[in-house]
Length: 480
Image 1: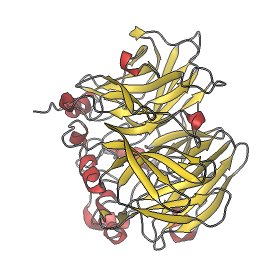
Image 2: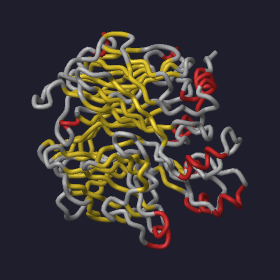
Image 3: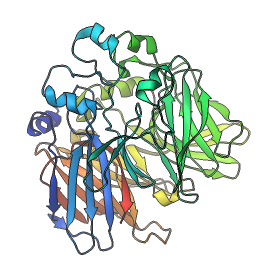
Image 4: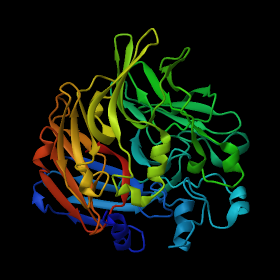
């Protein structure tokens, strides 16, 4: 019998709402490593508006490490219309706005008149050329003040996302929650999917110190669900798995967007390869699979190599995210495996599984973005009997095929771990992994720091937070 950890977690969070916090933190175990200086920003669902895992308003948190000074945590909700509407109807049986995973209260007619999904700015947070942005792939970013986390408003990125067209007049262009940074060229690239009558994939580039530019717009044959992409020194890579939005079903008010995502397992996954310098793109077909996230990609001669967390289909993943209870039941929550794909210059696709250990939220050393990497970090299931889907932090050695894992065990939930180098000027494997670890029945969050080369030894520092920081999805480390 599975313990209802998530039910206890939600009950302890005062009716399903994590409270905003501003506090100094002191270690309950170990000590803050010397030289760890910067801010960990994270974003995720701070409240619980439907049974879907993804349906919660964005709660952005910042944990600042200052050498010789205290560690400080601050969290604030992004003041979106969804958040403001939720304040007026806490604990309602149906959400007051139409969400990605649930229709609003009021029946089909009311949902027919509402936009497909209210922005919750809850997927990720990123510092892009000095602007702190809360990201959610169906909307423009929401800009925050980096110190106070005060919401400054929706951001059109130098008019690159400015409203245009019939729907755009009101909504603006979407900007995904997974921008890619190239440390060599000091550029941020990202995309946005437009799911209108003529579906398109828009590509954006932000040069450090310069404006954001819309580089190109590519017509898509279907309304693919594209959550993430990968980038090498020369190309952008999009894996268009056969998960296709049934737009008429959403537009009719019958079902929310995630209920209208259909898996077409008889179709191929199309690998779209777009040159960063411009010119013709190419499409290579492979056997169908589904992925949320990429770890990284790089050029190997004329070949392109990419690592990703692969699932066998969208159907099993949709079943999992449709219930918060599934998050705390490994028998219901499928997890991917780390796979490597190679696309040759001739268009041949080669693939193999790198490790049998389940994993999600894969990350690498950000200094190795667009270049070859050895280690991939992520969250995993420690033991099937743990009662929670992600209880462990892991390092995967792609050269040796080995995993270095620390499992917190039943009643704990870990976040995506982010790598912070010990010496930013020295490109080696030495550094720390910084993550959140939620104690579900207590309704609290710990900030945990691991030696990136000795994960199995456990955290070198644990910093308890007096309140929950919510169920976070993604974040970014920003050096001091």
